[in-house]
Every structure is written in C-alpha cells, then in structure tokens.
Image (cartoon, rainbow, N blue to C red; front, top):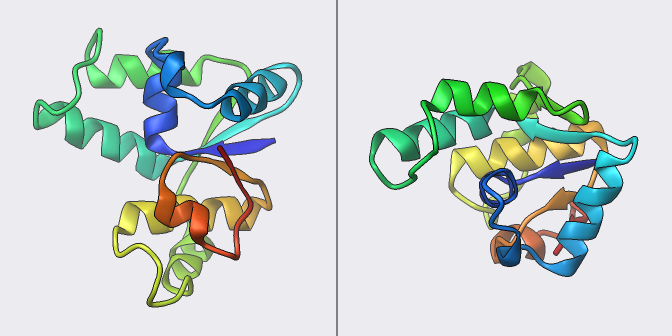
Length: 132
C-alpha cells in the first residue's frame, strides 16, 4: 500500500513514466499487483485547478479523466475528513506551506503508508516515509 503525490498520479496516468524514478515505478507496480494506491481527494482538486488554468493538458475532461483513474481496481481516493484536516495543521512550521501538500502528507500519516513523491520538501520531512 502506498500514497501518491499529485505529480506522480499525472505522470503515471498519462503514461509519462520516464519521469518516475525506478523506486517509484516499483512501488506502483507492486501496489497494482494486489495492493492499494491511495490519493487524497485534494489531488483531484489540484488537477482540476491546473487544468482550468491551462497548466495541465489532459486527454479529456478533468472529471472524466479522474473517473478513468478511479476505475483502476487498486486506486482509492481518500476524502479529507476531520482527522486529516487536523493532522494537516500539526506538521510543524518548517513544513510546506501549501495546504494541498499538507493534506496529502496527513492522508498518508492517517493511513500509515509511504508517499511516492519527487517533492524534495516532503522527502526531507522526518515524520513520513517517502519513496523516490
């Protein structure tokens, strides 16, 4: 079981796997073979915002794109609940100021899963196991 960051989802789902590290690819392959790939629902929001601003081009409407991703049996979008919201405030002042990254990390903490991410700030955070 793993969590994945927004950029990892975009690269993986769009077939841009050369942007993923070997360890990230291995983790995704393992999760697809009987595990789970968790994503915060804030990831759906981030993707929708990027698409709406023209910073991310998708092959189809963002809602349909997300529906196709959610059809992968191993994939599960995790809603931001009260526990995740509170955990996101307890990551410390030195952590990312980006609320989306806070929710993604808090989701992985709640689920006790490592996060696949290329984000250096998140990878340096000592209270979460990351894969890259």
